[in-house]
Length: 66
Image (cartoon, rainbow, N blue to C red; front, side, top):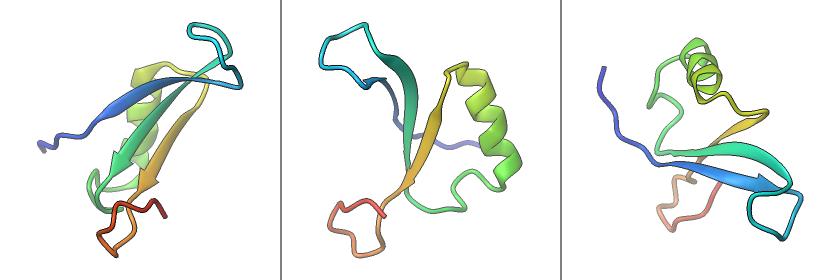
């Protein structure tokens, strides 16, 4: 399996860099981009963040997030 996607490391609950709670965010083109939930859990574990969110773009193609 090969797939490219962007991963973002964000500082949640703060307005200051390098403070707050670290979280990982990945935007997916489709819910099947990485197969099943088990793989998403493995990705989240590998990122080693307190929280990881996987966001789907709406099918409208306007860049909105579902």
